Picture 1 (cartoon, rainbow, N blue to C red):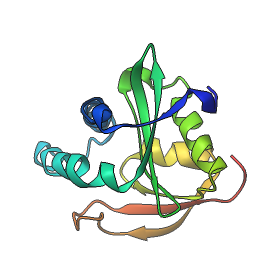
Picture 2: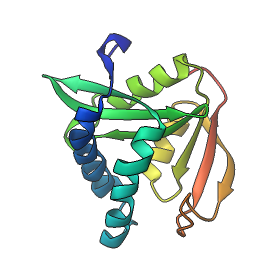
Picture 3: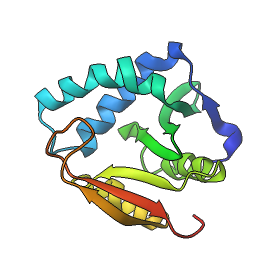
Picture 4: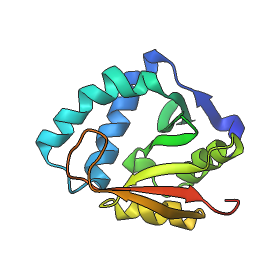
Length: 148
């Protein structure tokens, strides 16, 4: 997948972005409760999406994954479960790296994501006991040490 297949996200795309976020979270964030998912959902839609530079991948005109960048970091990267394993995450991350992004924070309990970033050349440089909302979900700060 090449960068020409990565597109900016418009507000009209937010319903699909939220579908992908929720499907991805349910497939990978098994440590979250239903109450947690319902807690995060309006934060994502009403605050976080507007706070990042959003890009997406599409297949047959349908968004398959998205990436949010701000403050020199990957703030979010989610792939629809039906589209995992196709290189979408790698393409989105390489797009971010080409823009100079070298850092990401990852839920420690999401071992698939931790492994993905490690495979892409990121190493753990720090750890927080809680996430950005103060919930007890440890966050690993990771940084790229070599070209992905």
